[in-house]
Structures are given as structure tokens and as C-alpha cells.
Length: 303
Image (cartoon, rainbow, N blue to C red):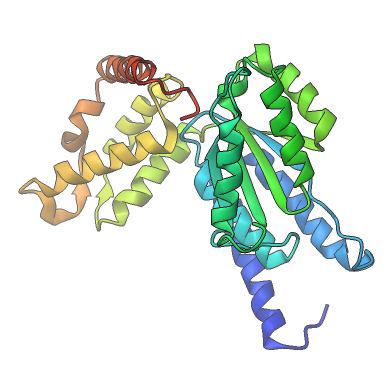
């Protein structure tokens, strides 16, 4: 299709760049398939009367912490904005919000807080239009309570201005019931987000380390791959958050060494990650302590 202006060429370049960044992201296969559907929609949009807008479905993202959701939300917002598949209006394109639980005997202040957050993100003088990523982990054992129904009533009434993404990490006891209830109000689509493969995780670490003008030796990569393969599915392994923790640990150790001049990070700089049994125990102890501290402080799993 020919383009008549530099503006059109720039938009196509923005779309292409956004697509490439999404497709290059490790894992996220379900999201990438959804974006491919959006690309087909974009190419067909000219066949639809302009006064009959197409509303995107709502999505249920099933994912544990640390899978890169925040970065992916920004990437898909940039794509949808460039592709003009939904309107954006506000100080930000994406709002990530954790919906705290509220006892049915209490006033639903949490919903009012959400409404205030949407208003603030619009600049207090317009309706926010963009992506609302709403964590509802705290509600998984309260799906039949009146406040959860109130929440569904509210978000379903605003689906013309919001792309709603509900985020949970449920056990299988709640998933079927949750999807059944959501489907009454929303055109819900399930998205499962897995952690990247151990190989992709090591490549991520190497890429981050290279930003500090050094690189992992082959032996170091092999040692990290063995360790990450062993601990990747432990509760205490928090995805990209843990990987960034490892990156900062490695870089700090390296640049505190007299041998930092050669730019190669050998296995001696990650010796504490080499003992799989020891590092597995550390991750488990860290997870148990964090869980206990959060319970003591009154935090719920979605905080």
C-alpha cells in the first residue's frame, strides 16, 4: 500500500520497530500470537466503517512474578498506539494496579481508590484511555463476594476506553471458576506466560553484563546454565528480578577485582552460584522468610 507523506512512513517504521521488540522478547509465546492477530486486524481495519470501532477483547494473564510483564505491557502499548488499534489519552499509556481485597461488610474503598488512580492518570480533566493491568490475586478465594461482582460491573462498563488485562497466579482450584465468572462480563482471552528457558536466561545475563563492558567466559556461562536450570522453578526464583540481582552481584564482584582489566568474567567471580545444592537452599530460605515477613506485615500475594 503506498503512503503519501513522511508521517505515514514514520508510523510504519514505529509499528515495525514495536513489533520487532515484542517478537525478540524471550518467551511470551501466547502474547506474540495475540500481537500477530492484532497485525491482521490492523491490515483489515480499512474495510470496517470508521464509525463502527472494533473493541479488543479483555485478557487474563496467568503468570508468576518476574516474567517480564511490566516491560511487555509497555511494548504492546507502544505497538497499539502506533498501530492506532485503540485510543490512548492520559499521562501514561499503562496503569499497573493491585486490587486489594475488601471484606464484604466493609465499604468498598478499594474500588474508589482505583477510580481515583484512573482519574489521576488522565490528569484529572479527562477520561483515561489506555491499558489497565489489574492484579486480582487477592480476590481468588473471594470470587463470589459482592465486591468482586461490583468490580466486574465497573470494569465491564469501561471497556470502551480501557484495554483490560487481569493478572493472576492462581492454583487450579480457582482458575475455572474465575474464567467462568469473567466470561459473564467480559470477552476474556487466556494468556499463559511462562518463564524463559534457562538458555534464554543466561543470554539475558550475558547481555546485561555486556552493557558494563565485560562478558561471561564460556565456562561461566556453562556454570550459570547448570545452576539456573536447577533453581528456575523454585518458589524463591523470581524470574527477571532474580536475574537482575545476579547481574548486579556478578558485575560488582568483577569490578571489585584487580583482574577487571581483561573484560572477561571467569567462573571465579560466580563461585557462590556454582554449588547447586547450596544456592537452591538459599533461594528456598529467602522465599520462606519473605513469605513470613509479608504475612506478618499484612501483605497479600499480589502486593
